[in-house]
Image (cartoon, rainbow, N blue to C red):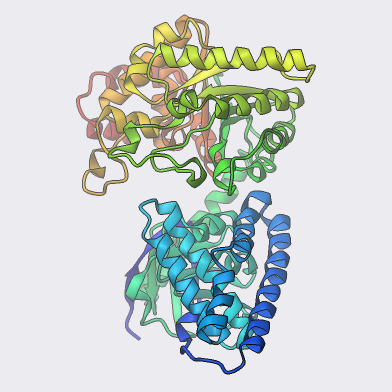
Amino acid sequence: MTESVLQGLGVSAGIRTGKAFVYAPVRLTDVEKKKTQDTPAEIERLRAAKSACEAELQVLIEKAQRTLGEEKAVILKGQISFLLDPTFYPPMEKLIENEQWTAESAIHQVVTQVAALFESMKNEYMRERAADVRDVGNRMFAQLCERKGTQLSDITEPVILIADDLTPSDTVQLDKNLVLGFVTRIGGKTSHTAILANSLGIAAILGLGDGIDPIQHGDELLIDGSTGRCILNPSEPTKESYHALMLRDEVEKAELQAYVERDAVTKDGFRIELAANIGTVEESASLLSQGAEAVGLYRTEFLFMGQSQMPDEETQYKAYREVAEAMKGRPVVIRTLDIGGDKELPYLDLPKEMNPFLGYRAIRLCLDRKELLHTQLRAILRAGVHGHVKIMFPMISGMEEWRQAKEIYEQVREQLSKEGIPYADSVELGIMIEIPSAALLASRFAKEVDFFSIGTNDLVQYTVAVDRMNEKVSYLYDYFHPAVIRLIKTVIDASVDAGKWTGMCGSMAGDPLAAPLLLGLGLHEWSMSASSLSKVKKVITDLNRSDCAALVEKILDMDTAAEVREALLAFQP
């Protein structure tokens, strides 16, 4: 068989080889519209299918809660909410009563209409919900036709799963011992399938499109979940080259394991605090065993995005407390709600904007809708009793925003005190440096804030005027741009002069190539994905801070990002 390379979206890392298992469950697309002569009987069939779906989903929710945590189980709870929605199930019964359609035809009609409504929405998150609607419809349909078609339960040996799409409830059922990875025709990086694949640690490629058509049951496949490459019938040379990559990865993992419990100390005795970025409560449970010394960024927006309505104070308090307790007294930097831009909350009914990244988002939203920030700060301060929490405000552009946020913080403290509710009385307050105006005012901010945290992802975007989601100009997006480096230096120097500290929670902090530069600039705290901790720690222990400081002096005299990158490559230990 001839080798062919298919390209999709790599959404969950890992190189895997195995036989293809083509997952082909019954779908609503198979429905042939028919009329019925016995409407009461059809309504009973429909009600039975609905009840069976609720029972099945409840079992899956309990499994998700055990294996993935409450926030991922919310995805499946959302599907039950569709069954209870007056605009979803009741119209099915009406179609049977008024049009004499069969139960299958009624399900097909309503699901098609509701899914199309979601797909027509501009918001990508809402468009992804169309898959949840179809999932519920397919589940009801499967009940009516007695579950014909290929099922996940048919998998009895290690395979690479092939499907048009994998619904959240499909993904939750995957057995990591049998499903080596999966490839789908459709799906995006923000889909629930991608989120769950990462949580399960299963290599995944989505959005292969028509490229998936040649793959047959039993075909040999090689997939790379990092690059999105799916190789059908790989040749022996290809298998050998990828086998070498897999062996290299395994050797590297074994070597890095030795650094998990080591401190990040340079050869000349300078110690760096390495922290982790998290988005969910569950991620905090294993941070200490992965070598994290702190949580440098807790992205609280994921708690809000996992709900069908605004999480109340108690829900937030519980989540923040769990993270604080999991870290056992080590610092937890909690970022207040950073929504807007590419992250939206349907229940907030945010206005459509021509350029949301420059618009109504993050601290701007929270200072306008003060009740959001007020409730969140109450929950954070209460949770602070159970650990060592710090608070930082995102997207601060000027002193006015910082002072308004600080004023609300003081009001919350006063209110909790009057109510006699225990709270953390001495919490460090910081701001994220994501906007050039804030970086340029760092010396002014340093007189009032307790710390800075540099968010390089947005700082680069705003400094060089590049939409990092736009593939046409993405080549210009580079945190080694000399202007970005100068802004970082300005912030760190300002914090040192004021006796404060600066952290970094953008992707630059987790790049081993950037380590000598950040060390030479004097960055105090580095926060990254947990998977990068050992890699960065290994590099730091091979460096001398004095040598890195000398390197920085040379880099500051460079004109292009390419020159900076070349210098860093040449400097590698």
